[in-house]
Length: 211
Ligand SMILES: C[S@@+](CC[C@H](N)C(=O)[O-])C[C@H]1O[C@@H](n2cnc3c(N)ncnc32)[C@H](O)[C@@H]1O
Image (cartoon, helix red, strand yellow):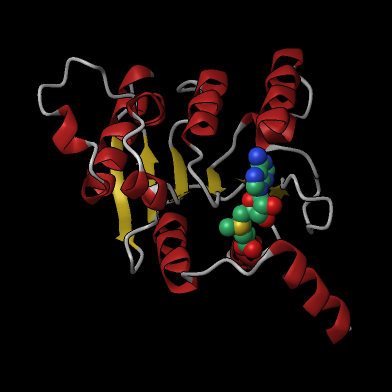
């Protein structure tokens, strides 16, 4: 048993910054009005999924592209979201018509998936709690890929202070700008529940209430 576990952790990698990742989720869970469904899109070995199951969610849906993961759906997050859109349009999978919390615990930056999620559900699931792990900091330190940052954080080219803001030092501010922009697009407001920057500043961990 121990052998299997060790092998699995080796294959999937052990995500770091557990304390930060748990703290943003504790704040997220506290802010959930109802605990019907939690959707976790980068669920890996299920460490964070267990937090949701143990805190009273009726259903925790898990998705991870790795076939060695513990996820129920072993497919990329984008593919799962395409399926979710069809299910909702067809009126299928009634359980998923009210997701109370959606979790994006990515290694990189999941903002395209966050945008896609809200394109599908718009404000129909409000109030909804969103949890994001964003590991774009390292890439931001190494390059100034304006197109990537525009696309990921929804910043328009007209921003006068664009170079200044594209610095990795402003990763938390970019995250705040992004969440508020997404919420506004669908006539909601985003309240910050918890935002932490990992040591080394390669990651921003955050949770949000959209209503
Ligand atoms: C930080 S780990 C997740 C840890 C997990 N939440 C836990 O608590 O153990 C990131 C996970 O994202 C998965 N992943 C990477 N790209 C993905 C994608 N496009 N779609 C779905 N999962 C992906 C990896 O396989 C990995 O398990």
